[in-house]
Image (cartoon, rainbow, N blue to C red; front, side):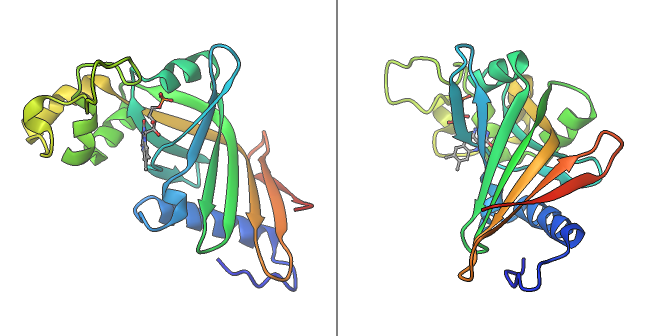
Length: 205
Ligand SMILES: Cc1cc2nc3c(=O)[nH]c(=O)nc-3n(C[C@H](O)[C@H](O)[C@H](O)COP(=O)(O)O)c2cc1C
């Protein structure tokens, strides 16, 4: 993404570039957008934020997904309050993107199936622990069957994880992009219109 902001970039072109960076962030672990911080609200109304890997982006649908353990607190939180925000930071490109939207938790169906088939054996291992994530533990435990500590499951073994897996699909309502530049920072907010497409406005950084 270009930081040459003088003359000001075209708002539509900047939106396209933002989507392009999100799409790049899916496969590229070195791209900061691969590692958003996902913020939810818990049962007591307190904020909860954690890193989750960006798994897919649909520019046309205005959606993105991440995956998680369906037994995790974040899934409970999102069922009670689907509104969430994701903060992306790419240090190299000097970009911060704050996404607000509403989550749908998929436990079956095409979005779930696509997520599970995308998930490699190393990723599937995360869903093979018998204990609920975030539950109290008696020791320094990785919550894995002992033979899988330090090794990946076979494809057959990994299928146990399917019943614990979830794909969280986020319908994006707004995106707030902050572009850091030596000449001065710039900021723009895109808001999804009911009729489709995106409204755009410059913000003071
Ligand atoms: C680099 C990194 C990537 C992570 N990716 C995910 C992820 O994709 N999905 C997930 O559920 N947790 C992921 N985690 C773990 C979460 O940050 C969090 O600790 C865990 O999901 C428990 O969150 P919860 O108790 O709020 O549900 C990741 C953690 C790190 C440090």
